[in-house]
Image (cartoon, rainbow, N blue to C red; front, side, top):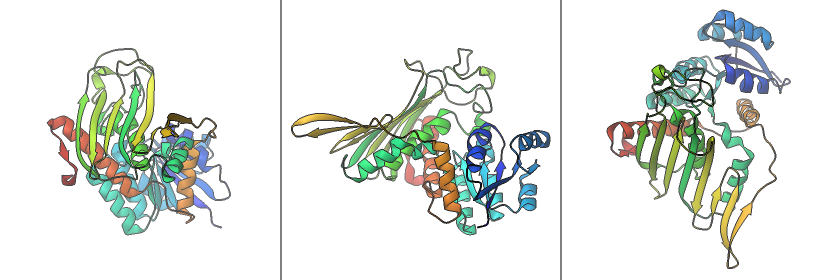
Amino acid sequence: MKKLRVGIIGPGQIAQTAHIPNYVKRPNEVEVVALVGTSKHKANQIANQMDIPYAFDDVQEMLDTCDLDAVSICTPNKYHKEAAILALQAGCHVFCEKPPAISVQEAIEMEEAAKDFGKVLTFNLHYRHSSEVEMMKRFIGEGELGEIYSARVHALRRRGIPGWGVFTNKDIQGGGPLIDIGIHMLDVALYLMDYPQPESILAATHQRIGTKEGVGLMGDWDPVKFSVEDAAMGMIRFENGASLILETSFALNMKSKSKMNVELFGDKGGANVFPPTIYQEKHGALVDIDIPFLPDINKYEKAINDFIDSCIGKKEPLITARQGVMLQKIIHSFYQSAETGNAINFKKI
């Protein structure tokens, strides 16, 4: 079988720690052929370190030179769309870091290009591949929660403003904690709820801490260059009557260092996802069912494997381009609602 020839667009931390190491775990099926960065010198250094044959400073040159089958996009959010469409046009499948892009229109263009060229487009929402989510999906599939009519989502950090990269630059990232970490737990909740169609969204964002100097638990940030929100809070109402409350932050004066969790509430039971616990009434008593002995899964490895298997035709990707568009629309609606102070009609997005 011909090996899947993969190129890496953006050779930063996530590429070096999550993408490349997990591609090379399948040497009989996959070959990482090339990478491209903004600096040819740096790209060459990383390529040499990671035993990758070719390095470039231009995406199109890499695509024209290397006869690739697939790419991973690990750039800042602003550059996702351009790289994805160039790769799809060149006949490559695309595995893109989250979020899909920085606007709804960009996400739609990416989805349409994948359809037009008949290629896989999926996103690295790796929490969906966790043991906890996989187990909870099985419990829900067996009817243990009944109809899920409400969810509560937390992606919170006390002082987790990234002190590196461009995470605090709104022009390049499109936003702060909502688009960076909130999207992970939002995707988990929507996936476990079977991705219901939103009806309306009401939200608020806050910028009270990041623009001042302070104690950082993820490195020191520059308050002068902090242009994203500290926190975003909001509620989604779905067309089926269900609701979801989302709270996310880079910096919030709370007790714990961080909290990443999804809670689900159904008419037959409720659930906590991280760690997984089911809450029910059975035999005249209120009972809690803990699920303590789950395997320790490498979520990044499973996400890469899902992409590889989708590329070679073994399965459909777990995360679809259509779901990526919906996530982008929800994020856009959150920010729009916060800016205008009004609830957003999702059908008009």
